[in-house]
Length: 102
Image (cartoon, rainbow, N blue to C red):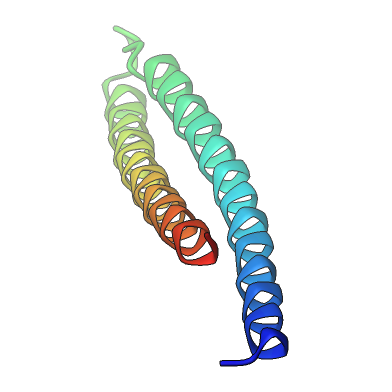
């Protein structure tokens, strides 16, 4: 391997690191947005668990809405965890690439 080949490889690896960092930042942002959204769903779910005594049909409707919001919140929380896992994977790959550069 010539010096030019090594320099080229280093530049490619550094470009990959930047790509991973950008991807990681995007995933972190998405994870934060999804976590916020999940919290909003849970807030709405609490709001809809108030059961009016005089209107049982309305109470039933609110109960269904509350369950739906909780389901959505759980899905979003799971998605956020997936993104966090991807971020960890990217960090490991970045560390591995930095090790290859040295």
